[in-house]
Structure formats: C-alpha cells, structure tokens
Image (cartoon, rainbow, N blue to C red):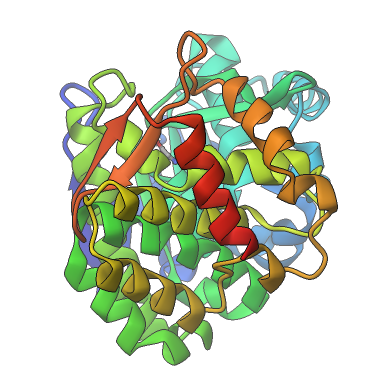
Amino acid sequence: MNATRIPVDIPGRGYEVTIGGGLLGQAGPLLARFAPTGRAVVITDAAVGALYGGKVVAELERAGLRADLLDFPAGEKHKNLATYVSLMGRLLGLAPAIDRSTLIVTLGGGVAGDVGGFVAATALRGLGSVNLPTTLLADVDAAVGGKTGVDAPAGKNLIGAFHQPRAVLIDPAALATLPVAQLVNGLAECVKHAVIADESLLEFIEANAAGLLAADVELCHQLIARNVAIKAGVVAVDERESSGRRELLNFGHTIGHAVETAAGYAGVSHGQAVALGMSAACAIATGRGLLTPAAAARVAAVLAAVKLPARFDDLPGLPAAARDAAVLRELMLHDKKARAGVVRFVLPRGLGSAAVFDDVTGAEIARALEKLAG
Ligand code: GLY
C-alpha cells in the first residue's frame, strides 16, 4: 500500500495520521501498537458499522486483540447526551471489564468520532483512542485535532473535551460508499483550508473537481493528505484554540452556523452552510480591500465546480428563516464563538492567508447577506 504519514506535532501529545487506500483492511497491526494489553472497543454508528464494523473487528482479532463493537443510531440528531450515556453504560458493562489500557477505536464520520472520542476522553478518566474516519469531512477536519463532544439542547458542541487520539488511520477507498452529497460536504472544508492557508490547493480542487466528486481513490488520497497537513500545522501551534491560529479554521462558519441553526438543520448541509458563509466572508473582505473581486470570483468558481452553493437561491429547500438577515444576525451574536457580544469573523487576506476580525459592522454583514440573496 502506498501510504502517506503526516505528524501532528502537539507537544507531549503528538501522533501520526496515516493515509492509504485499503488501510481499513490492514489496520490490525497499526491498531495493536496502541492496545498494550490486547483489548479494543470499536465505537461506530449503525450505518458505518454495517459496512465496515465487521471488517475492523476482524482486523483487530487477526492482530491478536480482543475486540468489542458498540454502535448507536446513525445521524446528527444522535450526537447527544443520551447516546453518550448509552455508550458509556455499555462500555462499562462489558465483560471482562475494560481497564485504563483499553483502546477505543472510533469508526465513522464526524458524529462517531466526536461521540466516541468523548467516551474515550471520559471513561475511567481517559482512555487512548485511534480514529478511523470514513467520510471526507471527518478525514480532512473532525478526525484530526482532538475536539470531542456532543450537542446540548442549548447548542451544538457545547459539551465536550479536547482529547487527542493516539493515531488517525484514513482509508480514501472508504469514500467509494459515501453519497456524493457527503463528499461535497467535506469538500467545503477543503476549500476553507485552501483559502486560509494554501492557494495551490484551490487550483488542485478546481482542476480535479470531477475526479474528486467521483471519489477517485488516488485524487482523494492527495486531497486528504494536503488538507490533513494544513490542519495538523494549525493544531500543532494552537491545540486549544487559544492563540487565534485555530480560530482561522472557523472561516465561513460565523454565517454558516447561523444559516444551519436558522434552518433547523433542514434543507442545508453543514458544508453548504459553510460555503454560503465563505462567500459572505469573501464579500466582506472584498469590501474592505483585503481580497480582490477576481480572487472572490475564483473562490465562487471553485465552490460551483464542487457543487457547493454561493447564493441562497442555489439551495431551493432552504427555509425562509435561514435567509432572514435579522434572524441570522441575532444568531451570530449568540454563537458560542462570539465574545462579549462581538461577532468574530475570519476574513481572507488574499488567497492562502486569513486573519480574525472583531470589528465587522452590522452594515458590512447586511451587505454580504444581500449578496447571498442577490
Ligand atoms: N473544525 C475546526 C477545528 O477543529 O478547530
């Protein structure tokens, strides 16, 4: 197998991300390294479990490990405390009992990684974990960087912990079973990385859009490697989002979160909402002279090439509340990323560079939302 290895150099908690086509079917020896007493528990959702759960458990057993599989119902709405409590109860009820050396293997998309990672962070005050992401979104974003948790009635991701995995194993061949809408969802985060950190990645996505949307294994391998390298570089210098560097990963998310919340998470995916948010942030940056209109047009062209929206009308199923400027502004003010009532925006400064701004005015936001509506 042609594998790429990328280090995540967090002081004291570093690990490696390994990317390789077919890796899921050869993961046993790699996983066994992190289970010193030969015990592992795989946490996955029922849909991914049906596709890959048996394969991963068989791989663990082939490497001489005792492996149990715990699953939960698939879907964002199950990223909650009830799922966490159920998984934790089953984990602690396993016989023979788990101990501090038990390895948690999270298998699946962002929800499985977040919930499974949070179980790992908190069971017996912390177990080692390895992430096996199976969606493009999780490959390029959620699986790397140690954010774990569940949603609360008051908002998304409000309960959680930073818990770095011991390793991340990514098999781009797993994307073959992913609906194209889910690929598009992940591509939004790739465009985000390109705009904030690497203009040449924008070219790569634009030039290879058709192959990426067809889940070509070699192209996806390259795409994932480039994005993981960017994400790893960011979290290595700002693991806990305290210096402002990791905050750059929120590009497109200020308006994006407001749109998906106003929509009640219906009629718009996370990636589509982030794409709208990126378009709006580019409009604000253009208005400030930080980005040329040609550069903003280029971002719009790449979004279109990978079937992401640049305007509200590109999403016919978007509820009216999610286009309402007053509703969106109110939600932005109450987002957990707002500080002391100030909305924070990541704005590009040219392509491949960005910064956080806390002085974006209501008028600038209103003009950007008008562009999305226009
Ligand atoms: N998805 C943004 C982050 O991991 O910080």
